Length: 149
Image (cartoon, rainbow, N blue to C red; front, side):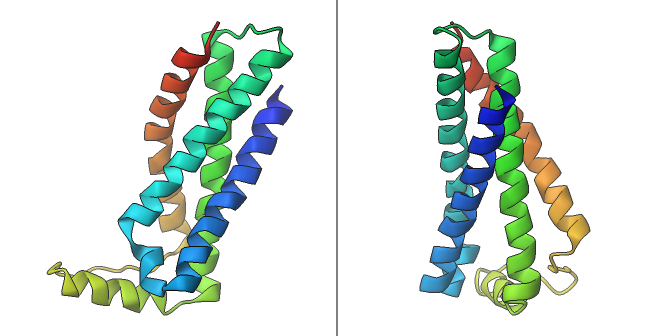
């Protein structure tokens, strides 16, 4: 049943990347809007629910909380992996000027950025990916709690 979680995770990660890219094409500043970026979590949670529901149906309507948690979290990890790889490509290959735009937007908002390095290095992107795993675990736990039978 992990194949289902892998499939849902990768497809949803690509959908999240496409979602952000559409906002980027509409207006570069929208790709940096926190509401747009955090909005991708709805994709991930929806995919977790759909994957666990499909696995539960395949098991004659039964799934343990542990099995639901494992598959939901796998979906989340894969969605985030694909999404943050896209962020790395967007900031480093597609439009390296996004870093300057981000700095300008932060200055306009009154945030001091003189000593901040906003580059999206692989290490920083990996750290952000890893940081998202903690809330992802809690989302997975909520999904597993609601979906178990």
